[in-house]
Length: 294
Image (tube, rainbow, N blue to C red; front, side, top):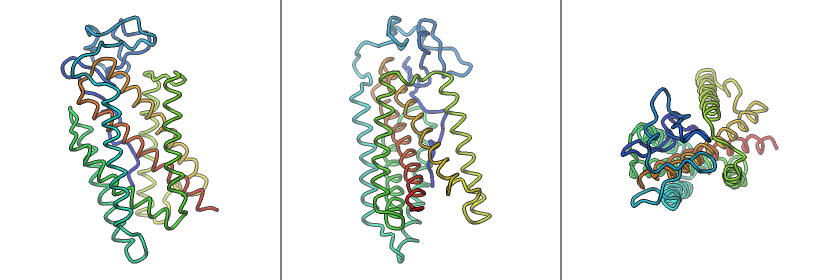
């Protein structure tokens, strides 16, 4: 079961044509000096950005409106298309791939196969310099097939209300982080970014080790996905997802501020979809443990 953002350090906009994005975000108050908390050992190509204004409140320069520049409407539209594809294929797989005793093995096999294909597409897009709408939508379609099968399985064998609870929980996390980010209760700094990356990589490594132990040793491996430890790691996974949402919002904010090209809004939609899928899967897993113990 894939529940991780595949390439943590490659999230963000390209640097073509003098545009900046997530990997070119300045620290608060450091725009005039061209400080870049996300660039690793490279000079900041945006220090002489003609669109940068040094008098903004949080140090994020604002670019004047330009033809072909990314806007928040572009991000919302592309994200709606990507998430809509996930929801549509999830609903279709729920309806067309039954998980009763006679068909569970077949349906689950198709779901796992779809998850692997989605993982490959996500990896490819994460390493591409430019956004590929076809690749992103293909990822969303196959991811939706997997989510539909796994959600139907949880609803059938654990609790019918668990899936709706997970959906509502994901929406609440999204809304809460968005409000906290807009109110500046969350500040995405270089230290925040480094902490989230380190924590996420450690989390994924632990889950991989647990998976290996469960495959070769049987049972639940090291117990990270059941009982008290499962609840703890489920909460940690959701918190990490919330942190990634803050990084996604920073990515969008900086892309718009620096005048990133419109096609880069697909990267923002891709990042937001990856994060929301992560949160939903962790929420579903956590609620499955809690409802399964009732």
